[in-house]
Image 1 (cartoon, rainbow over the protein chains, first blue to last red):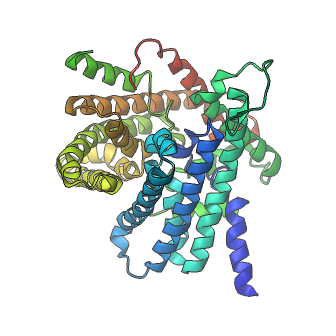
Image 2 (image 1 turned 180 degrees about the horizontal axis):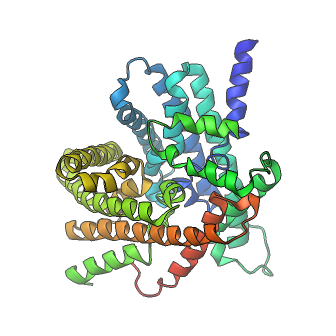
Image 3 (image 1 turned 90 degrees about the vertical axis):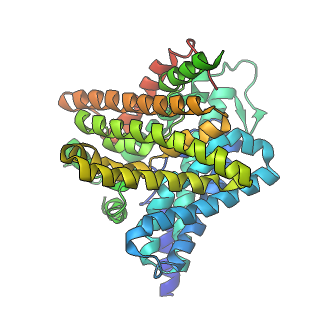
Length: 235
Length: 198
């Protein structure tokens, strides 16, 4: 009973209160670039969920043997190994997709979410829970990007999953397919979510938000990455 | 285009027309987090330029003289990330020994750089686009300069923004930064007609 509750909690936190994208603004680097086409985003997100889950599992299983001083390096290598698997699988089964995604598959390695979860969660939790936590962080991240990709492809090319759904009357918003569209969409998404669901400290207002943001550099630095989850959970 | 001109073209394109941050979204995490003050942005930008230029060259050498002959190209991710991490570590140690002022200015940013997607991204782009040795150096340096330019400009804008502006609560922090980045990306698209290197 208790164990299953823990699993459920680990799963829910990544999707909801601890969602990596809008709570922690982590890891949008590599994947935002491919959100102009829904199909690419799905493949990329699948790769990311796979990598986050399994690298969390591996790091957690090895956590007693990883020396503290070099743990960042070890984690990176574990993540890189899983990403290589994703890359090879893509090249074997979806060669066209692999060519389109180009370097972005490899860049999952430096995606802050994968590293962040390994640092903040997998290093101090058992393997099963870490796997669930990784999968849920990946999923929480993916649905945000899928929504963004859906809107970008629909407005930018009038199509969904490559099929034309809007007729001749539709004039494509080219801007949505290009980089600025990605920035604007993500900003709008964060605005909607933060403005309507996360109004917990209105008294602190902008100042509070600034202070909260000031701690964000921590998210990048290794030693304090644990603080990220605490911060995300607290707010 | 012939050799020298092409190299210059790559350099120029990496800064302006295909800015690694504003068109490829690489290095967003540190961009959002550190673009709060101009001074720190300059420090991080300088560190990125330096590391990116050198690691592109190192990774080029590793790729064409080690990975390709041994036919283990699929290990390039691991090789590149090790090179980057080792190089950053080395630079940190050297700076610490040589100059205290430099260490105070750049040292704290170096650990951030290992996990900066833009560094690895530059190396991967360089391999995919099959640049020559010189072009990869130009591409690495150019991408670094482009990244630094973007983050410094953003820091300047955000400083102004903090002084007098009413940002809706939902947009504070990351939201408004992303919108500014979007507008910057639009502005940089104005360079697109000048040169086109893919």
